[in-house]
Length: 256
Image 1: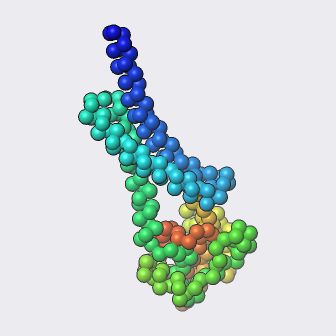
Image 2: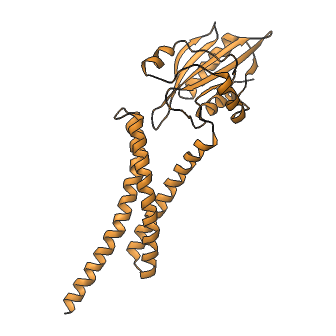
Image 3: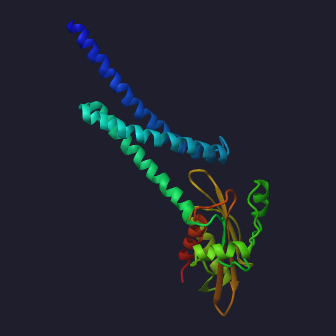
C-alpha cells in the first residue's frame, strides 16, 4: 500500500513537471520563431512574406505561452510547487520581455505614416542614377516621389527633415558624404565629386531589407553647399520611420 501511495505521488509530480515544462518549451519555440523568420529572410532561405508568417506565428505562440505561464504560476503558488513555480516564472519573464519588444514595433507602425520614400527636398527630390538598375532587377518599389501625396505626410511626421546648407565646396563635401555613409555601415554605390551625387545602400540587420540613399550637393553661394538627402526602401509600404532616422543621422554627421 505504501509503495502504491509513493508511486502515485511520483506520477503526480511528473505530471506537474510535464505541464510546467510544456509552458516553458512553448515559450522557447515562440521566441525562437521570431529571429528565425527574420534571419531566414536575410540569408535567402525564404522571402520576407514567409518571414512575416514566422513572426506572426511566433508572436501568437509566445502570447499563448504568456497566458499559460500566468495561470501555471498561480497554480504553482497556490499548491506550493517550487519546481513548477520556477519554470513558469522563467517563461513569464521571457515572454513578457519579448512581447514588449514586439509591442514597441507595432506601436511604431501606428505612430508613423505608411510611407517609405523620404526626401529633404519634397519639390525637387534628389534622383538616383547608379542604383536604378539594381532596384529594377529586384522588383523594388517605384522611385517616383509624389509631392502632393507624400509631401504633406512627411512634413507632418518629420518636420525637421529639411535641406541643410554648409560651408565648403562640393568636392570636399562629397568626399565627406561618402565617408559618412561608409562609417554608418552602408555600401557605397557611387560617388561623383564633380556632379555632387553620392549613392549608397543600407541593409537592415534582421530581415536584410535594403534601403537606397542618394545625397545631392549643390553650390548656392560663395563657399556654400546645399545638402539634400533622399532615402527609399526597396520593399514594403511603411518603413517604421527608418528612412527619416537615417537622413537625420546623415545630416547630423556633416561637420559645419
